[in-house]
Image (cartoon, rainbow, N blue to C red):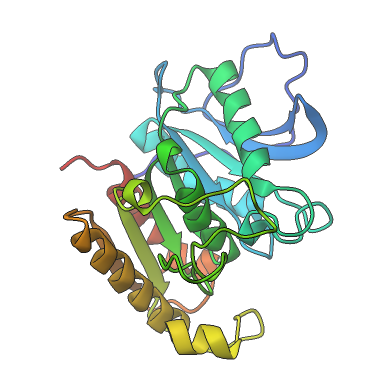
Length: 280
């Protein structure tokens, strides 16, 4: 049985010398950018050098719900949890790391750096989850920063960046003129284990789904088809390099395209933490 985590407290722990409260969800302001918010959970029994779990919201930007629903899992597994907030006015394109607006990947790096400094948690390798638009961000972050990522879980992305060097990012991994600083190295990112979770009822072409003809042709027409196709592509590319990396795909029972329902009915929280943190 999971421990019951307390609800969010709107606390900005200034000055920074104050000890951070454990076992509650803290809403914080980034020291280097007063307009940047994130939620933080430090477990009661977490130790110095604890692992960091990051959960990234979708375009509904339900960051507080992410923090509240995952806090008990962070407590159980003794990991520090970060839930970054990417508001639409500053990060209109965070799913693709930031073709437009501010760069969400760079902001996440700043948040992680601050959290590691104030908590003593290890930022060496990160464990990430994202739902919908957040899952788009998470897998592209993995492609761009493989040296920083241990494992990821993707909850029902609408579409994917394929491991295809002939297609320009974000459809493939060919360098993009909009993000010239980012280069993709399959020899690095194909080592990272990935689990894709999609609701078994998440087969509607709803208003939020990318319906471009090219994406339909390359990846399929539903989140289920696209998730299976991407896992197959990643698995194939890994095998061609002699890698036995785990790429898993699971349907969540009785779940449509909904973070809250997938957590309540589909067991998404349990499946996420089992994949990321269970040994063996």
